[in-house]
Amino acid sequence: MELAARISPLLAPLLLLLFLDLSTGAIIDRPTEEGKEVWDYVTVRKDAHMFWWLYYATNPCKNFSALPLVMWLQGGPGGSSTGFGNFEEIGPLDSDLRPRRTTWLQSASLLFVDNPVGTGFSYVEKDNAYAKDLAMVASDMMVLLTTFFSCHKEFQTIPFYIFSESYGGKMAAGIALELHKAIQQGTIKCNFAGVALGDSWISPVDSVLSWGPYLYSMSLLDDQGLTEVSQVAEQVLDAVNKGLYTTATQLWGKAEMIIEQNTDGVNFYNILTKISPKSAMKSSLEFTQSHLVHLSQRHLRHLHQDSLNQLMNGPIRKKLGIIPEDCSWGGQANNVFLNMEEDFMKPVVSIVDELLDAGVNVTVYNGQLDLIVDTMGQEAWVRKLKWTELPKFNQLKWKPLYGDPESSETSAFVKSHKNLAFYWILRAGHMVPSDQGDMALKMMKLVTAQE
Image (tube, rainbow, N blue to C red; front, top):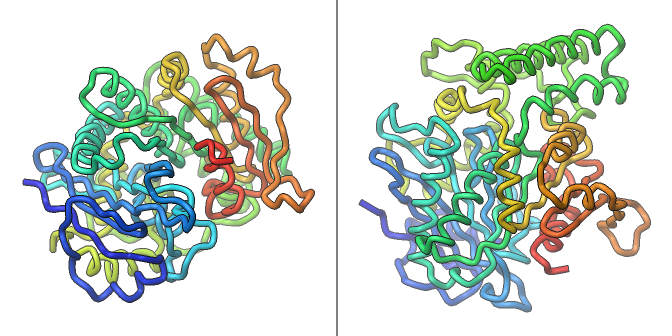
């Protein structure tokens, strides 16, 4: 049974502070004022419930109907879009509930979805309801988007973009292809305009193979360290080539440990920093797959910081008013990760090829200082594309971009041909909008044809 959509009359982001003590707002069919918020659950499968949160654009010069709708997908898998993407990257307020100067809300309506089920405020009632692979993740999202666009007809003709980060990019590619097919078949009515893959886990093995050379070039590995990292990377490649994806995931974890030992704990999300000395995220659950637990804690910990966890399970939970009592934000995140083990190291380069061949606009963007999905690895899988226009794309010279039009400091480079674009974002790590908010906002406007 679906829960009724809830709306909070937010006329300006700062006013959220005044509404944190309110219960759910009034139920209406179609908000007409800008600055509105709506949230709800969709039951995507038996025992599987997905949470979404929509902000209507707040541009002072344009109605939301004149601006695009952007859906943001977080990584992990198990990272929360409504939490991290919203309060740490592109939403109207930061995690201290202060207005964000570079919020994307000034140029687009924002739809945050906690996926796969079990992520963020999304939850499953039984252990067998977790998503196991990309096909199930995409299928669940089709149910959610069908419901969303049916209930919010005002967005059916507005250009709809999917932006993503990390593992969210892998999911976004699969979701984009299924959405394109659904629109062709007439089962979903929306104006799908493109997908953006940010620091995305499209071809995991290409990332792993480039870790050694990248760190070596940045003086974070010596000759011996490079040899050790390269050896384990070749083991990962061998496992992937043999289709042993579970083994490849285990070896991927081994490669990370070798890098930590040789780099004095470099941060995989920004090589200019180090891993926090804090102990791994505590969990009351009992796991038997110890290597997976270590990996999930390592890569979900930064998405569930204590301050964000307190915000989401405190004032935000109270504001939303529809979260079940036995569901805590992020409480099922580890299980989301564990259930995707077999799918984790599988590449989806072929899906990107299908998107390009189908004429879907595809944008790839990457942070210069990211290690986990370094730019060298992204460039490597792009070179593997079978897209007939790729040779012309490769022949193009990139163009510099400036975050401040009055400054000569280069903020990014871009190359674009037909329906493929690539952005190299300078001085940014894995979370591009967190590190370079101005450039991320400018990129979003370029991708959505607003600049």
